[in-house]
Length: 152
Image 1: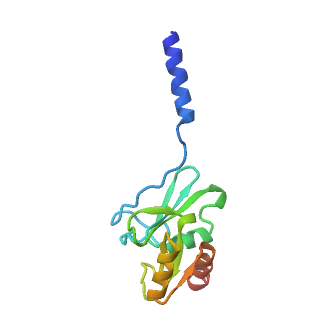
Image 2: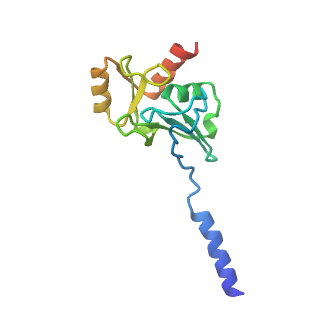
């Protein structure tokens, strides 16, 4: 009986100690649909994701779709665990918002036409903006741009 109680105590402790942190889900390109525009997500350079505090994953085919989803309050900020974006130079891998710098450049076409891309280093973002005649943006600037250029 003592062994059973010890095993039960260890099992309960393991449950409480294990990370209950929500985890980003990989986008299945060519299969998953965008939770904003409903298009199939196909371009690995532009995928993004919103993860809720309960671990639900909303996937998007572009930065502008995620921004519109956030602007419209589809998931409250209190229920949002994090926002994740693909680094254009590391296609298919998602990184947290706090690591990203965005570029809006008419000559670098994105799936939904606002021509937004994301990068993990300021130097790369600056280089891309210069090469494609664009500008770098932070997340608030991206949301303002999406709201004025797309949602109004």
